[in-house]
Image 1 (cartoon, rainbow, N blue to C red):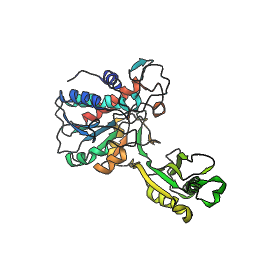
Image 2 (image 1 turned 90 degrees about the vertical axis):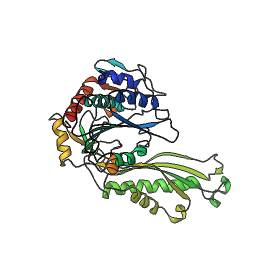
Image 3 (image 1 turned 60 degrees about the vertical axis):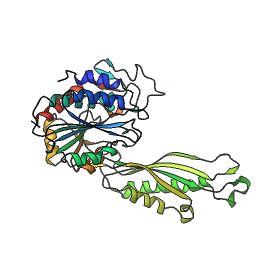
Image 4 (image 1 turned 90 degrees about the horizontal axis):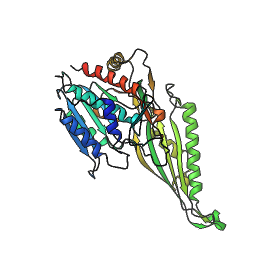
Length: 377
């Protein structure tokens, strides 16, 4: 077995700059090499350009249901951020390891890879799988390319563990997200004759007004889940761009907005309501495109798999909903298996300068995954 521990491996993983707009292949090939040296089966799933890849590794009997560990290899950019140490050079200080991706989520990946290496020492009765994806940070895009392959390759797992940073608490739910881009169209003309023309920004304002009205409706009459800080589905306008000069009636205005929905809500139903609330003479000037979406996650705390996971974690471990999205809903849909989110680190330091993970968090993760491994023997 490779004698690399999770902390030492995390130092190596941080050194790979896997910002989403760059290739992740150097990291993926490095992980592939150390896994295969220990007799672990590895398959790669490439994007169309062949400059990024998902990695799937498995050890143990493939014809049995097992445990799937999953995490993304990409990180968010560091440009414009003020770091106290090099972002892509792990630095240990005061019981923490600093660097881009330490919490989100190379800390978990390091622990998971080490657990796979440990698994190679045993004759497992049930398999342990590892999936590492690309482009999660830009809409859970990359993992979609491997889900069908996994569904046809492995038996539906007993449990999938997504290792996003939860401070090693157990998360069973998060909202889904759908991103829309609305192209609001008008007619160019001299502003002195403005009433003669359709103003694209005025059209956009009607859309925004409808978004606000639907948000109020969801708040007051929509489904509720008090496990979230915001217990209802939210509608948010994030960007508007339109117009060229004050004395020209604008012929185009682009509105980017999102729906973050509870698992029991459907974003397309909400989208229909948004458009229905706009006067028909404005509706005809709006062309909406769905840019991206990922499903919500909702796993029952009463199922056997969750109760099993709880026994492997400390007694004071809480069960919670998380405010951020994960690939969990995609795995749940494709593999028809229970999904939980549990990993080292704090989401509040993710995407920020001086991101870090505590050594104690990595230790807790190692202990948890060791117990998970022993359950497969």
